[in-house]
Image (cartoon, rainbow over all chains, first blue to last red; front, top):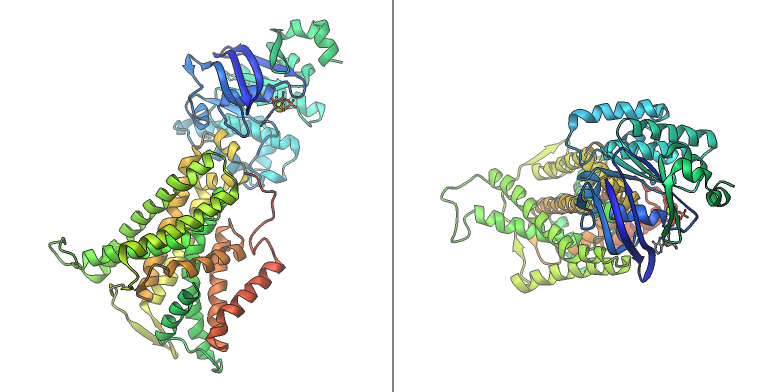
Length: 239
Length: 334
Ligand SMILES: Nc1ncnc2c1ncn2[C@@H]1O[C@H](COP(=O)(O)OP(=O)(O)OP(=O)(O)O)[C@@H](O)[C@H]1O
Ligand SMILES: [Mg+2]
């Protein structure tokens, strides 16, 4: 279980999260909703232990995963040792590497060599487009294909817990549905999913639970079904 | 520094294999110069590879790199002297020159890699962790180079040292073209190094990480890759190649002095930029282009004009393709 308690973080002198608390149980599919600038990406970067100038500094509070304190952990070890992966905002594909290399580089720290080839197969069966474009440079992919590659990469890291930062951004509705179906499938085969979204429609359709964030605070939480019927949410996020 | 350039230039004229000045270019001379150009190009390429590797990973121009070349040559000198029994403390048995050469190369590459990694640790890494601007890092690199030069001067004095002849020199003549086994060694080694580096960077995961870092450092962390280890690996490669270049250089032109890395270093840096900095092929091709321009210019024009004409040609190349021959323009991400 990932557990955040009373977390305050700041960029320079500006506090961006004002004591948020949340948890994600193993095997759950949880969404974090909120408008621009609410602090959603800040939350994910804090979990990954990224550092300035990109990410904030933790002022107080705790972040634990499976009982381990994550706060002193270096970012590459959050991935390599704790098995948490992030599909970052804007995908951040390595444009100068091929699709295959983008996936291969994600296996850098893995020791379970016998499972790696299975994982390639799984990624290519979830995203057949990537198999077709295996030897193409990352920067020649379309936005949707890049999102697939970013998700495939997080999976190839061997992550059992995947965080995603607005995966639906800039995608056509049909493709969005496809990607969330893949997430659902991953979730059903044992991967825990924590997804940040502005698109509440789609997030609440696939997630089991959700949090709503506003200007650095969590203002609402509940089951996805509950939130989908909530008047305020309907007005603010579901139009 | 201009004095330095002149100094090794004279040396290189003295080896009697090249004729400069107003001679007519015959076919024999063309091939003779071709070999000389390949040898000089090899020195430049080996050093340029170090500039390009570090730039590719950190977007840092490691101006200390020319002096790492010098440090490598000196370390090689002391190791070789040790094996030859020049010091009170020595081996109880004698080794042949070729064996000593091989040991000297290996040990020197390891020790010089240590020097490069130390500079990264004490000078560059703290700045990187504090998010210092690029200008400060480049100035730090320049100062590291000056510290190495002047540290050497302080420790060993200004006198030159002469590198021992470890490899027995054989001279071959084929169809009027004269060459030595050392020249062949230099050229073949450089080509092998190039193939080796290409394989590392293209095929291995750490090589992929080296390429990926220049594109997006944060995303590299998100792949579970320890940045610092990849950076240290890059400095190990670059510095050990500079050491290799240093030993090959003094094997061919056996004079060591504290400023020997300055001018050669600048030129290799220019070669790396002309080839397209950050690209391994670029450093290789850029190094050879510079070697060829220098040798053929010196063969046709008075040698005092060599650098002037060589640099004018390089300027022209850059103005035609500002990204360098293999360079690709890209938005700079750090
Ligand atoms: N690197 C940074 N340096 C300084 N302030 C930052 C930085 N990144 C974000 N902020 C600030 O922190 C607050 C939260 O930003 P964050 O990126 O977490 O929002 P978000 O919920 O992800 O928004 P969006 O949906 O637009 O991505 C904003 O006020 C933003 O200006
Ligand atoms: Mg965001």
